Amino acid sequence: MTEPRVLRVAEVVDETADARTIVFDADFPYAPGQFLTLRIPSDQCGSVARCYSLSSSPHQGGLPGITVKRTVDGYASNWVCDNVRAGSTIEVLPPSGIFTPKSLDADLLLFAGGSGITPILSILRSALCAGSGRIVLFYANRDESSVIFAAALRALAAANPERLTVFHWLESVQGLPTVAQLTELARPFATFDAFTCGPAPFMKAVTEALKSLGLPRERRHLERFASLGANPFELVAKVTDPDAGSAVVELELDGTRHTLDWPVETKLLDLLLDKGLAAPYSCREGACSACAYRLVSGEVKLLNNEVLDKDDLDEGIRLACQSLPVSEKVEISYE
Image 1: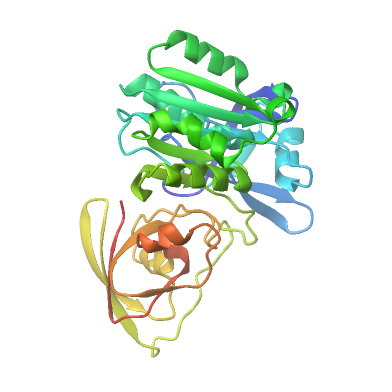
Image 2: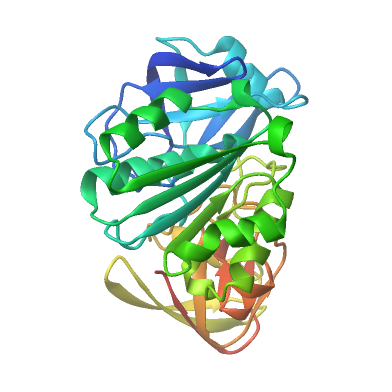
């Protein structure tokens, strides 16, 4: 699936009072931890776009599904939960995101807060099905009734007692987890690869805990989302001045090496798509990490960035949808 596509809904599963899994009657490739961007109809502006993680596993043979939790003022999440039924159709962009293990055989330390369990569960299911490592899940929620996938997690832990350990944390009982508490919980698993998804304060606390244990940046993975202001289904590439000058960009994508002239007023993602390259993307406004690449050499300017932190930037991670060339030559890598 390389272009926007209309998917038919096969089933809607109530997970909790305010969370539903939308199962699609479709078959397309995706990686554990990735997300879909949905076009949601709107009376005010025609449509809005929102990103929702796949909670299913591409390794289990079932139909793909996303899980959506209502938020108090969330137009899109409430529309999905109120209106989507079996037989409904939804337009989606291709699966995107880099929140996925390089190897499912790795030992994994997974942190989820609330609906952040969605991509984490996809990774967990995939690792149990197609991997061989140990998996430890720390799952924080407001109270027992808000635990999404409670029954599924019990079943997975019971079926895989040698490989899977699940720690539940309830704010109603234990309060919010502190950095010190998270540090002690993670300490026995400091050699594992860590993946974290949840509310921003939760992810910040987990990151501080993992840093205190010396986990290097390459073994700490975060999934962040911000509400999309623009609509990637309707965005048109900006027309640039051909006389403004250009740089040269070298990159490898899907195993093929490319050298391209890069006009200084053209965003990198627009350039790649215009050349017919299947570069990954979703929001096109710097609010997700789907188009992330590594800057190998040269210099670029980011017009907007809502998801990369200082560690990401120090590691050379940049966003193609917001990158303009600064140096005459730029080399990048898609990993």
